[in-house]
Length: 384
Image (tube, rainbow, N blue to C red; front, top):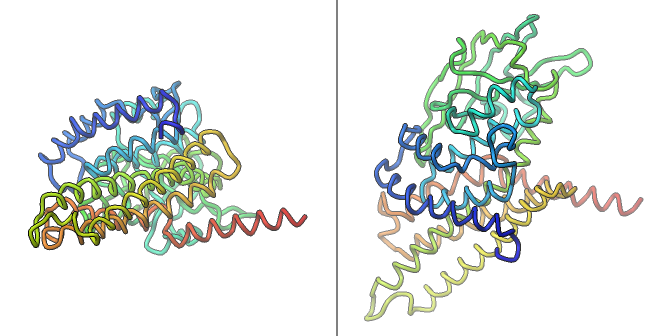
C-alpha cells in the first residue's frame, strides 16, 4: 500500500483505522447486532468526518476519492458492519446528486449529507427488478409541476433510518417507452411508506417500500427525464470496488482472529497453529487478502484518475475480493472449530455478514458478465 497510495491517502488510512479501533469498536460492543441506525451511531459517524471523500469540497466534503472511500470502508467493515452500510448508503444516495443535481439541489442537500446531518438511501431494487434493472415497474407520471409515483421497492438498505433517498421510476417517453428517471424523495413526503422491515441472515436496516400516489415536485427530478438508468449505473460504478474494500476489512478481521485463536488453542499437546493443516489455512488467507487488496486499490486508483477501463477493474475487484473474503472467513470458522459456529462469536458473525456482499451492487455472476463483455469489446476493437 505504501507504494500505491500518496502520503495524504496513507494519513487518511491511519485516521480511519484509529477511528475504527478507538471509537467504533467500543460502540459495536455496546450496540451489538442492530437493524437500524441508532443516534449513537449517527453521531459517531457524523463526528468522525469520514463522509468527506464522498462529496466535493464545494459542498462540505473533502473531494471525491474512490481510494479514500475504500480505505474508510475497509477500516469500518471488519469492526462494525452497520457503520459500513450507513457509510456506503451515504455514498449511493449522495453521488447521484453530485453527478446530476442542479445547483439548487446540490446546495440544499449535499452539505447536509457531507456533514452527516441527514442519512440517505438508494431506491432501485424491486420485487421483479434486481439484476435486471430494465424490469423496473414503479412508475412516475408527469403531472405538470410534479410527478405522481406508484410502485414498490425491496431490499433498500438503511431504508428505515434514512431521512431521504434517490428513487428510480419508469417515466415512459414517446421514443423511449422504458425510460427511467431519478428523483430526490424525502421521508416527509406523503406516500413514501415503509411496507415492511426485512430480516436478513445478518442484522441490517433493510426494508421494502410501498409508494402510493407519492407527489414529487418537479424540482426534485434529478437530471433529465429518462436519465435515471445511466445515473444509477454511474453511481454503482463509483461504489462497486468499495464493496470489495468492505470484504477486505471482514477478511482481515477473520485472519487476525484466526492467528490469535490458533496460537492459544492447544490440542494433542501443542497449539493448533503448529499443525500444517492450520498453518496452510492461514497462509492461504493471507495470500487471498493481499491479492484482493491489490485489485481493490488498483480499481480505485483507476477510477480517481479517470481511466477508460476503470469499470472493468471495478468489477474484477468486487468479484474477487468478495469471493476471496468468503473463502477466508469460511476457513476462519474451520480453524475455530466448535467455537466458530457459536452464535455471537466474531467469525460466526462475519460468516453471516460476508454473504450478502456477493449479491448486492451486482452479483458475482453480473460482474462476470461485465468483465466478459469488456474482453469481447476490446478484442473486437483490436480486429478493426
